[in-house]
Amino acid sequence: MSKKGTHVSETPATQMLRKAGVEFTEHPYDYVDHGGTAESARQLGVDEHAVVKTLVMQDDKAEPLIVLMHGDCTVSLKELARQIPCKKVEPCKPEVAQRHSGYMVGGTSPFGVRKAMPIYVEASILTLPRICINGGRRGYLVGIEPKVLTELLGARPVNCAQRG
Image 1 (cartoon, rainbow, N blue to C red):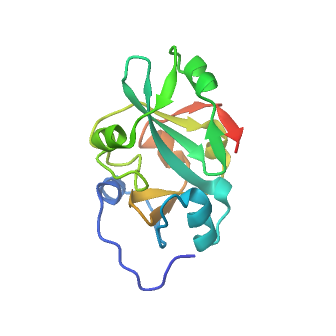
Image 2 (cartoon, rainbow, N blue to C red):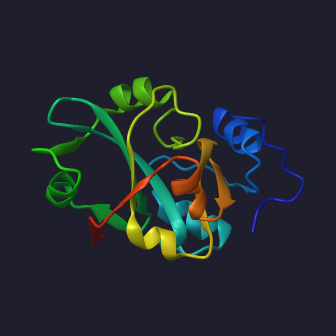
């Protein structure tokens, strides 16, 4: 599933996971611009539904938040806004997302972010046996149990997935 003998240096995400005693597997892959979760899933031989993307968004007051979504789904912004509740939610511009998270777009992890933000997770992600999620750099996923999202990050479940 991952490249043999590839060492990946620490990131704020892996430091946070190790410090919390979370067991995780490392899955480096060759990053492709605009390849997204479809490309990482293909290279790693995993189901794209179990590859979780980390999306930095903002509410109507320009307050940042993170949404964790299945790789093969999109976020219904109207449904998310209704559930969290606020007037509207929109994706942050890449440079704004980077400022909030401390990560480059394409390498954003919900672990070890620069600024504390509320985190929402698509509820069905929590029913999966294992997920792959960004480990804090482009071309690097970590495999974890989904319960880590709620136990370590305090992620709140929402139902706002739309099949891509």
